[in-house]
Length: 457
Ligand code: HSE
Image (cartoon, rainbow, N blue to C red; front, top):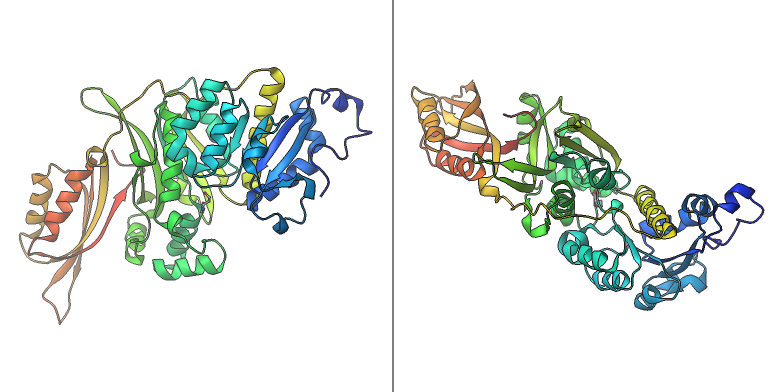
């Protein structure tokens, strides 16, 4: 590998040379895994282009890794195991962090920012956990903190939220932001197979990690929801504020029930501005599997792709779609941020900041309006529907759809399948309705309970 920012620029077009003659922008790269390797490749292959776009050469000064011997492709004199020394080294203007996790990434980035260095990071877990601390350090030092790669990989999403939509009022962000779970749910939808066997297939095909917990239990999507909600609503939202359910409980029966209603099941990250009866606003950030109409733009997002549906007062609905993971797609977002912060340094300033001026309260999940799909096996005799409806009425939950399918069998007394879809009600009221239904004599089984999203009023 030639040295990024040093090789291959001689003898090029004069105009391009002329605009890349500023003081070099020194870059430190922390981490050289799947994403880091692609960052290095793009820095090398596009050195001239990057210099022309930035207005100064972009020079890689070092790559911090844990085991240098595992990186024979990287010039040996760039490699170091001392990340802290690299971050503080003279000439480093921008620190790119693709290590992941909380420590040592947090301490290294705080040091970088406090030293006035710009930071580009793909670390969603760190931002969702310690975002306010990092934003504060960036503000205090007048340094850039860019993190486009932290949510939805290659998809340009955070800068549109932070910059392009800065003049609008965002009301809701609904995203498929985890490729692993979207692959699994899409496969369950097309094959009719159950969760466990589909997860196994996803692992065999390399779509799920050896330990898929962060993905299938919704932690990855929740971290991304915290970041999206912070930007969309100018409010500091962290991991702890995000309600989370994963997909491990989604059954083949749920997916079939969704299909029968003209819906499909997706793991959604939902960030919503909720206005209550008195006009007071709050932020709801939540992750759970939900049934959405097959006609919804997010329903056609298949495989491991990501997509985010943004609703704003003036812009209306916007859809962002693309590859949400992988070395090259994520590196594309990292490089975009590198060019942006390098341009800011050449211009002698910094870019638009994350802001938290609105400081809206976080709405607890219990008070958040949601709608449920409930499938029950019930006794099929007079008065059953009235008993079921009474429970909904007692909890002030309004029913939108009821569908009954009769069933007869020689072995069991006459039974029926009852599917109910509700209007929006506080989540706590819906949960309590389901608990009460489960206790009714006439209810033989609660077959499936899942939230519905996308068209309910
Ligand atoms: N593991 C994530 C996914 C990608 O499956 O989408 C990184 O956030």
